[in-house]
Length: 217
Image (cartoon, rainbow, N blue to C red; front, top):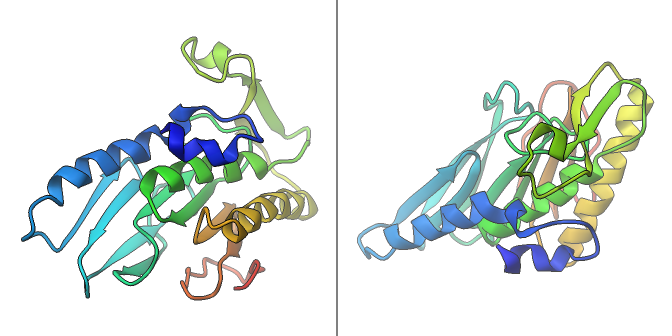
């Protein structure tokens, strides 16, 4: 967990940001000790660790709304791809978020890395607007590691320009993390609007109406 969040030391993040992905990795490592197992995955509430032997692949369902949590598209991960972890973060999820993304899904080399990066990118999908409600994390959960930091508790209707601004901010962070080799690709969603950050080698799905694609896609 500490190793996964260390590259993000320039922003506020604690090791708990990678706990779900790290646990998924730990369980998968025990499963993968059996050489007869060629393909396996551990899904810890949407943070997924993958084991793929040579020539194997796995199709993963993707969502753009954590409140619905219904796969609306998929991505196929093959053994030759540098992806063994997938994680999703957003303000409607089970963890607190400082941003307004409905969902940010990240593909990375490890599940813990994807978990930490998804948290950072989801926090960056943000903007100030009266329709956004926030509260200190401690007021919602006295044991939260975020203390008095404001987290998102509700998002009302937003103008298209505001949504675009928030997604642009998050996509910029995702693009930087991809250039630094910390993630392979990311999908960011607010309502029907999504942004994709990828090098184009991994094809992430289109949802709903046409949307802008990010760096290298």
